[in-house]
Length: 373
Image (tube, rainbow, N blue to C red; front, side):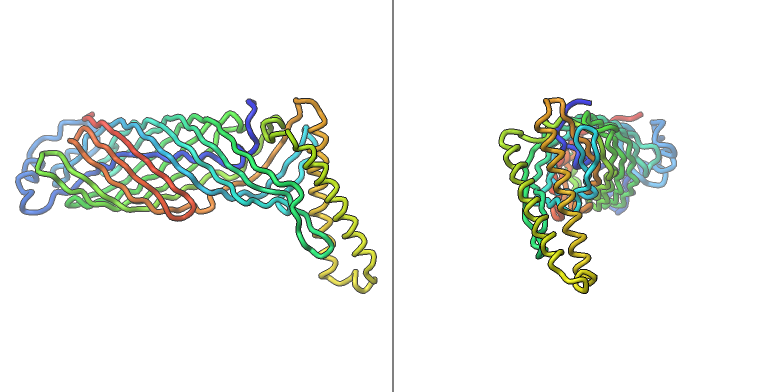
């Protein structure tokens, strides 16, 4: 496995996919009577979509049945991390949930992909996704331990930023319907992103409902569409693997922080033990004191194991490794989106979309070419 920063593994890459907004539109209104009559009487010339001839005879204007788009996507989102376990040089794993506190955990980056698609049925588009991604994580966290009064102190602060690349493949479908230029689309896809630092490809599921309206210009086949909708991302949460210690930390000055952390843990443990031993038997049997003592011991033991393991790894050679296991997720799976598309003609479309609210910000632009098949 290639060497990567451990914090790359604290989240699963989310690969957002754009598509040009075309749909089967039911022609209505007196001013469109001539267009409606021509659609109904002209024989549908393409193999796809299935039942395309029947749809046109019922007054639906169909987009060209095949297309190819190039999509660029940028995003920044907050992450939630839990069930984090870390070990060194294939030794015992330590669960850090009780003692680690994340001030900030963010993922940001961009993806460039191509998306071939076909209209399988008049109201169902299916597509494939192939692309490359460059992402970065930014983590600000610390290891905390309690004293005899249950006051918690940070013993090892750390920050890191990691950059990495991935290759994505995915499949998706979009049920959609339009009437008189108004339309509804329910885009969904599943994608797998191969990141060298992960033991297996990362999987994500995206669902994006959109409701919009298309406005025609005087120039034939030219229009502009506007829409609003939502964007939901679900990622497979469990991740585990291994990497070199040097790719996790900037080791300059780290030994001094570890030494100070170990001294603080020993000091806190001594104070907790002194407090406990000075309690009477009656006081030691109180549930509140039992719980406080057990909680302090678990936290101090976990921090001590982590710092001792890190201390040993720092004193080893450069082949020291870090093993990890964790669950991660988007802090908010949903956010709000607004978008627009300019159609030059039925062959070429240019689209832009932005997402905001929640804990994710995103921007996407897409250029598509369509043709009959």
